[in-house]
Amino acid sequence: MAVKPLAVHDLAEDVLACVCVALDQAAVDVPDQPGCPECRSCLVPGQVAFDSCEDPCGPTPQTGGQLSVSIARVFPSTSFPNEDREVRGLRGCTPPTLLAVELVVTLLRCAPGPTDEGCPPTCDELTAAARILSVDLVTVYNALLCCLPDTAPTPRGRRYVIGASKTIGPEGGCVGLEQRVTVGLYGCYTCPGGDAS
Image 1: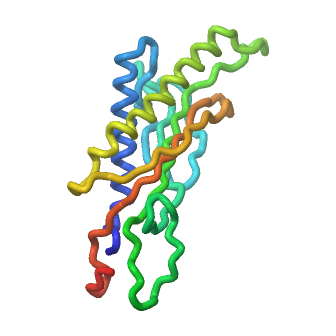
Image 2: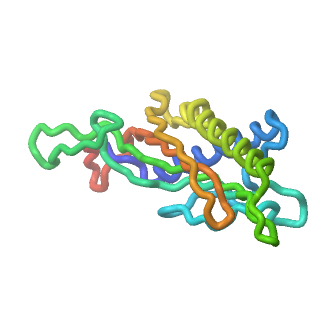
Image 3: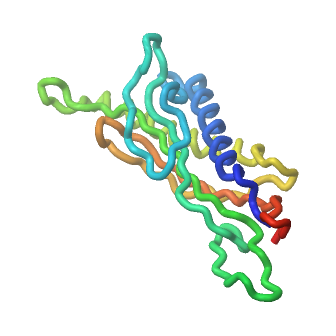
């Protein structure tokens, strides 16, 4: 069966919400850990631009940085998480079981930079940034592992594969992480014209 038109977008919103809640909890659990970015936390189309990682974005103290979820690719899957390569339009062919959606979670924080005099950041500054990044890596992973199954709109639950996480930057004053996750969406939408296959 086909997938509802908003299924992929709703999934991306669920992932964004899961990660943001987990980041805020990490800020409570780990001293000096920033929470979910308050001004730049959104879904983005295509590849993520390093638009903003600076700290407070308003007159009151807020958590800076940039959290985004984007869609890397979407593909049919009969044997999840593998891409289905079966030719369609033949008699007796089985429609794909799932629509697989690969999402990219990107989290950027400020990277320590040189002083006005051109001196490099201190080891203490670098160590503090590395600590924040390592906590962020684990927090985003835990968010997907613990929260994603509960976002399923059906009793079947979610089928998903958490991919590799990698650090990105420093670039443009930003450093952070990119975490991929592939989620299978079950079809439950009737095709236009009434054909459900």
